[in-house]
Length: 522
Image: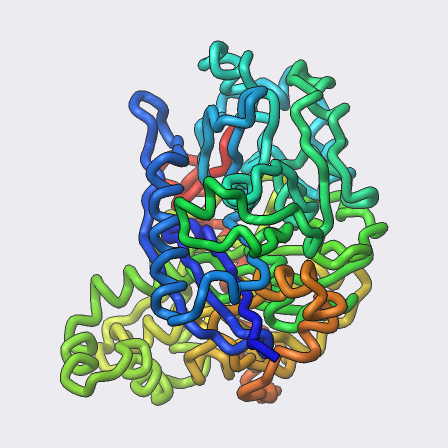
């Protein structure tokens, strides 16, 4: 029997990728193009999505992936897409794109303030249904469009997420899945459907919401037009995908109630699978999203910029290690970890101040800094600071996980750790020591793309379900057990860090320092 292939299209914040897998989950080829989301002229904190240019990049990636794989296009049985969440695309009545923004577009600060003042308690009311606040939601952005671009707003007939836009370009059908559409905040966790009454309550169009289809549902075949543009066969089926974190979770085998993952990328996400019927916490401390698995949601903590902070630190302070990595032909982080192993647990009580633990209802961060440095250069140097950053990312993750445990009643004892950070043996051990949990590292390096390929495979019945695909395809590489002696050191450091962070936030409140990031409307 001829081998069947699956294509995953991954629309991330910084790049678009096309990845081809075989039915056993082996990666056959990958093509990637960086893309940028530019601030709109005269619109502070905006992050526009350029669909014309980005479609060209998507087509180029698909063509390149097929070429690299050296397979016939008709051997690709199905494809699906995943994307950064919160990014939206709006369409007119003829299904032509009108306007789009990427995920952390924060232009609607004024609208967020307006909604909170004119509709007291509405954010809390909507959060109780959707698990989302206004910070990155679609309602304030739609209100911004109505106020500032009325001609465009009047033409709006449909809304979708960015991954859905790719699938619509390929199949001609605009639809959404719960996991990604849920991040608009105009959605019900319990019913996994649009909650259009939220839009009508604040004076926004309530008839722009397309069909909601579960991940793995077939949308149709690649259209003749898309076939010409991408090199794909019109025999290839197009299948509903989902949000990058949720499909990434499926690609890591995090598919059952109580399963937990820490995804260590540019941002770190801590996700715990819970029942869809479980109501979000009253304090609005964390986010809750629909999972790609029907009947499940994911409680989610987010640590801002952990991977980006590490990249900044490497580029700002680690020139010696970069040169060493070049001469040894290895990764600079491997060298930094090698040296950081010699630093005692707790990094001499250095306190990095970057991302706060998640406070979803009122979310802002202190100014970036390191506290508690000393003048002994043998102790307080770039290597101990590097280790303190690894420890701090794990500490903030553990605080977020403790918040999820408290409201969900789930006891966490095992964590799947994935993303770029999980390549570090030291960082993986630190996550185990800080949390007191066993930490499993999956073999797959492209979990998000694998999750999208799984969705495609479910659509064409290569796999019975996402759970079945996860059981067949997810392979474990390593497991780390916690050192409970180290955990005691980290427990004490965690308390110190939380107290220090509160003081640092006060400096932002007093306009002495500048917040690393503030949610719109604060």
